[in-house]
Length: 107
Image 1 (cartoon, one colour):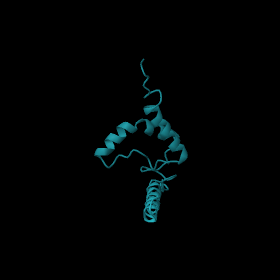
Image 2 (cartoon, rainbow, N blue to C red; image 1 turned 45 degrees about the vertical axis):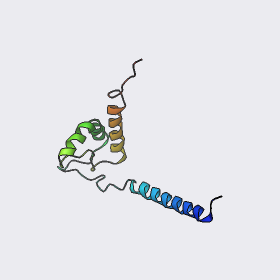
Image 3 (cartoon, rainbow, N blue to C red; image 1 turned 90 degrees about the horizontal axis):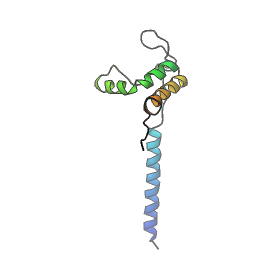
Image 4 (cartoon, rainbow, N blue to C red; image 1 turned 30 degrees about the vertical axis):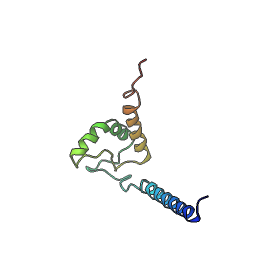
């Protein structure tokens, strides 16, 4: 049997680890987007599904360009909300996992 001191230390360590994991997970939670349903620069209305689809498909190029310039972002914050997000994720999946990016294993 372990001494009482060892069991207590293990419980404290487990509790500290659990709190640490919860803090890290809470830090990863998405926050509100204040740009939803607001006009983009140039007076254009918020971006919708089709713009999300397009921007999801051009993500690989946009990401590389965004590393070298501050004027290019990989995600448009002035969007319609869920429909833009659906198009964006669908565009990404078409490039990386769909028919445009699928790689078939050769036997």
